[in-house]
Image 1 (cartoon, rainbow, N blue to C red):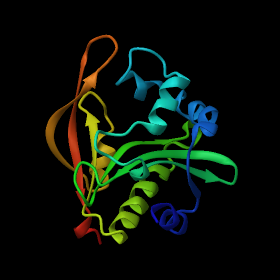
Image 2 (image 1 turned 120 degrees about the vertical axis):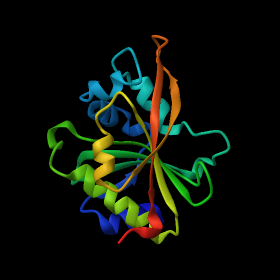
Image 3 (image 1 turned 180 degrees about the horizontal axis):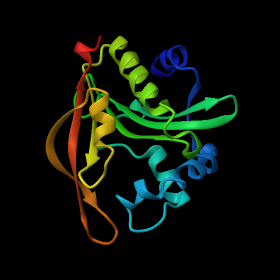
Length: 177
């Protein structure tokens, strides 16, 4: 139902991405080296992208994982990784949102976030959460879309051994106007 709602709300064709879309996803992601520098100590590889398509947190059902592509005609303009009912029931987790480099700054990411919030609210979800690395400057993007800053949490360890620390960001979907 999430994809159907997003197809109504967004001016893009939204669909679940698969391994067959790996080249397209990789092409979009590799143009964002600053994002990947937060998590890796190497340039993003196609294997990283393919792994993200199916990786889910422990205890999550595969059908609750939505690695979504937003298309303007045949052009992939954005991707979003959404997990439903994680970390708790009626909470959605945004693992990633990334807009094609050529259209960054045109408000597409913000529009996707706002419509995702509306779609989740219509599905009776209570919260949308994400984790933003402290080292990044993307926190202001989430601030602008109503996400409140929460506690610091470990996000993992980069391949060079450096720990990644993030801040939990949460928006309460019950108070969206």
